[in-house]
Image (cartoon, rainbow, N blue to C red; front, top):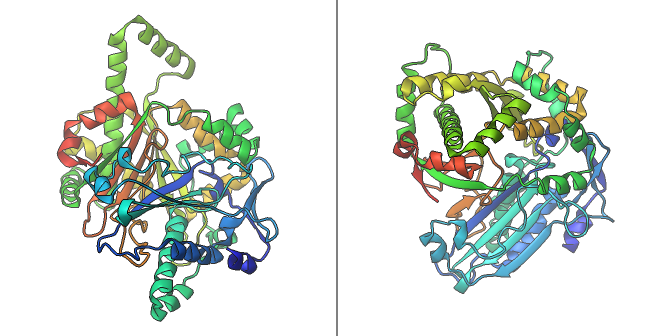
Amino acid sequence: MDKFVSTVENHEIPLHPLDTQAAFLNVPYHFFYPNTNQSDNFMPNDVLRDSFYRALERFPILAGYLRSEGTGKTTVVVDRNDLNMPEYLESTSNVLFSELQDAKFHHSSWPNGLSTTGPITVASANGRIKLMNVHVVRLKDNTGVVIFVSMPHYVVDGTGFFSFVELWGKLCTVERTLDTVLMQQTDELEFVFDRDLISRSLPTERKPLGTETVNVYTGFSPLAEWLAWLSPNTRGNVLSKAKFSSNVVSHTFRVPQQSLESLRKKVCVHVDDLELKVDATHVLAALISKMVAQAHKKCEQNDQSAGMISTLVGWVSRAVFGAETSQSLNLLADVRHGLNIADQGYMGNGLIPHNTQCSLSVLETPTDAETLAAATCIVSKIYSNADGPLVASFIDMLLARPSCFTRPMVYLARHPKSLVITNETGFKLYKADFGDGLPEWVCTIPSFVANFIGFLPSPPNSSDIVVNITLKEPVMKHIVSNEFWRDLATIVY
């Protein structure tokens, strides 16, 4: 660690409005490594620790602290004399790796205390928000190692997160093997933290934003304004007590690529716009959108038949907030592609949500290839529209209203049928090799926040898509029993 401190140069990084969009959330993942060869020198702790700090030399932002200027403006300060060092913990466990395998890595089999952060970004015991938390757990009889890593969305998205973990693995391998070729390749990697890269890459052309997106970000909300005014510490404390994860259930499924591609072809038969690019993940997003809408409808029907009190509660809710006639679908897209900077090593947040309102009359219809095509077209049109001019217009809107970053969160909380879907199949979940092979399984924390859907890549040697779904428990019951879904997907846990 002392060597790392000696390399630090004082600097400040004003965060971009894109960094605030999910700033209250962490990016937490677990990496499960088996000691396949039963090696006594398997992922040694001292080398893991030393290479971690060498990786940190390339990511000094993770040792900075947040300085809030209020209403959405935040700066990361990296001060050599006042570093906010990442939390790095090591422990041992009485759990065997084979026990994790037998449980298909279900969280009930994990070592106690494995996850050291939750979904919401909160201050640590010293009163500061850590910009990285790491927990290295060596399993019983050295049968494997589990590494938990968490970073707040203030400083990275999935691209930055997995770039750091992959770099850490490469440096660990170099230290263990003295591989000069790998060392040179690692030295040549470029990581850009300067948020001005986004501003410099914006096109001059602008494209009108969707009405739904504008309404979400510009609609006045006293609660949203208050949350934006709070400091990151206070806001995290408030949100952690809001119980976003209460009565929430997460399930993980595997969708075979071959089955999904077959479904995509059936759906495309009913798509009239022959120029519209329909990706398999678009079909998957549309299917989940329909399933969730159908599940909510069944829940409402069950509530109505449950008795007078449930009916009265539903009537009051509709009287106050109005009856929902649409589902707010929020699809996260990476601006790096739209701005043509995907190859420039940008490590800041590059995700923007594209919001659209999907009519419940469309989504609640029984699912077949034809009705699924109608929902898929909505998704595909959103992604096809996410180009540079649209990104530029979105950023213009954020710059004009720095405090608007809390409005989507409040909007989603008021609309329980809303969904947030993120496609992480292109992220490097299974690229971090510390010298003893790739992880056998990578996953996030057991319960994230409600109405969050993540598409993840499968472990090596498989092209399947892993789908993590987090919903309120009554809604989830209808998802796992949905016959169309059960024919397509297999539940992992």
